[in-house]
Length: 320
Image (cartoon, rainbow, N blue to C red):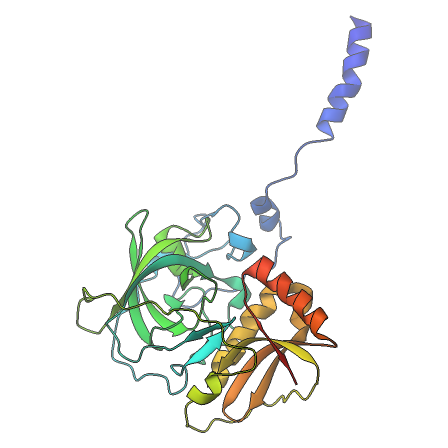
């Protein structure tokens, strides 16, 4: 018996020293993760009742001290003038978009995603600061500002949000909700869900008609169709004018500065070591979000392949 015990003791000690690591959510609670952003004044908290959504999607949730999402009311549709520039035609990630200018006549279905702490406080396409605790959303073509009812197809839950930003631009994505709106729909932990989107006009129910979804069409590398579609309204130039020469990957072209800056801010969080190459090149009334420069076309094409494989982007190779 003594010999058996002597043999077992080292095994027991080894087992105690090789316990599995604590879950990500526990490490976040211990302060390892990025500190959470303070919630907006409209959000009330329930002490000790902060939801845990599997650690958050890409660690982008608020972590401990999250607000009580049930206490945050839906957006209420009201008459607002359309943004002067945010509804101009534009291209992003190799696709062309023509925003709608009439509210209340759109219905679409696709993947709903969400964005949170990494973008909290950054400028949206409307020029407003993004608030992950507000009932807002980004959509590629719905008017800015406007309102929409978003329904989670899987559980039937619905919310009303205010559209104040552009995106998402990945294939199959229909809408990007704020963290709070996605939490109310129950898909924060999963990161995405199939949703239905119905635009709302103040005082009217959503229509039965279905608007045609934007059909992506990659622009030719030697053409820039946005230059022909940019609005004629004057807009102050970007303070930083990029004069570098070489090969660039064009990720978006906009008729307004806010859209270009909003796309650059989003991409800066996704591109890792490539983020340092993000620039906005201004020519007249067109603002182009580009990645570069590279000394030769082969290096630029290699980077393009990385973007296509990892993020589903379809950048256009340009030279200047």
